[in-house]
Image 1 (cartoon, rainbow, N blue to C red):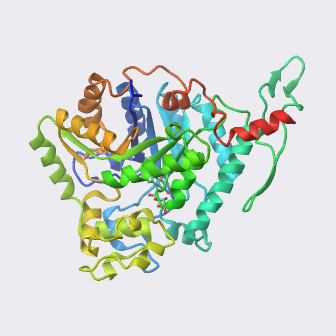
Image 2 (cartoon, protein in one colour):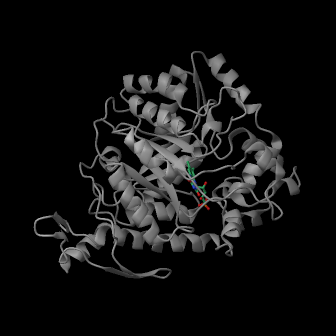
Image 3 (spheres, rainbow, N blue to C red):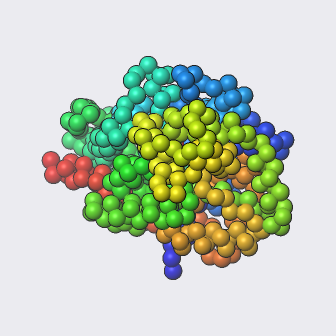
Amino acid sequence: MASPWKIGMFQCIGLMGAWKLPDNTSTDFLDLDHWLTMARRCEQAGVDFLFFADDYGYPVVDDAIPAGALRGGIQFPKGDPLAVLPALAAVTERLGLVTTLSTTVEKPPMVARKMATLDHMTKGRIGWNIVTGAGQNASARLFGVPMTEHDKRYEIAADHVDLTLTLWEGCWDEGGLVEDRETGVYADPDRVREIEHHGPHFDAKGILTVPPGPQRTPVLFQAGASAPGRDLAARYAEAVFLAAEVPALAEQIADIRRRAAAYGRDPRSIKCLIAGTFYVAGTEAEAHAIRERQLATRSFEDGAAAYAFFTGLDLSSMDPDKPLDPSAGLTQTGRTNVERFLGPDAPTVREIIEEFQRNSVMGTPIIGDVGQVADEAERVISATDADGFLVQPDHTGTFDSFLDLLMPELVRRGLVAAEPAPMTLRERLTESGSPHLPETHPGAAHRRARAAV
Ligand SMILES: Cc1cc2nc3c(=O)[nH]c(=O)nc-3n(C[C@H](O)[C@H](O)[C@H](O)COP(=O)(O)O)c2cc1C
């Protein structure tokens, strides 16, 4: 039997698409109860994890945040997921909790320490989404540093992950934590050692001061589908988030699996998850009506602001009747959403803005009654060779329609696991039977080096 689909739920500590609708709750994003309720609902419904996207960016055009982005709440405002996750861990037992830390903004020892601490606080349910970061132009301005070039950000990311893995896997041997009050020994000096890393971008010598948690290394996710992004995923990721139309998704997934094999990894050990938007209701007509209500909340100006956030490009200053100039593909902000609109059948600038007004970075939504949506979801999975979905919130800012209507149908069809037991996120996602990174992962090499000492 094929493995069950993996289902994650997408959020950020901020406004969600249709926040202007009266029945949308995402304006409560600074209210902890909002998140506690959502986490409990996700756990009860049996989904695998709740993911919080994060970055320091926002749209910047002509060296300023556009008034329309402030008015419309476009990729703004944003709070910090790390302040929320431990509270969610306290009210759940099985739900995986995943968030982003950027390799461009955060230094490796910071990522290692925060995630190692969260691995304990969540009892082994934490995942790290590795990104070089969306909204780079805004983020660089905010931190007062020059923007690092796109491909160089990915070179830095690879070195960053290598060092971070060394800290997680290389410092503490099994048995390094003694914690014996009678002998007064906390840690065994023969089993806890400083690591040394001299990479192209990072130098470090020292220990991770947090003893290993249940997973030791958090589950490694990745997002960002430009060519170097896919390469980073193939080297290190255990799960990848992708958003595109079905043919492009199929190509991206095949490419990631090919690259993974070239790195000596099992291509199927990377769970490819499609960021999917679902409008599911009692009838097809109701589902379309909800879609129409949601569409009415987003203006053409909102579409252009969202595009500026992801790419650093100001479409509103370009000829709306022409396609993007190919030089746009050299943007130093994000490339996934430039590359998808270049090529022989390239849409016009106006059409790109309209696409962002409708769907932002996500592919075409799946709309219909329960049976129609489940059928289409099955078709998308088989056409792309994906392993599951990262579900976008519905028009209410929650996942109620997906959890109440679609999840029971997916369980009935045997597509998702019915009653997952409490376990670590890695065991749940990879079905490897171990909470730790597999031996075939490059992170395990730091372990081998340690054992050889
Ligand atoms: C579902 C999904 C979730 C993502 N989450 C984040 C995130 O939390 N933070 C972030 O900076 N980028 C995130 N990204 C990636 C960005 O959209 C962007 O592609 C990337 O940061 C820039 O890399 P690129 O040049 O490879 O596109 C996400 C992408 C997808 C499809």
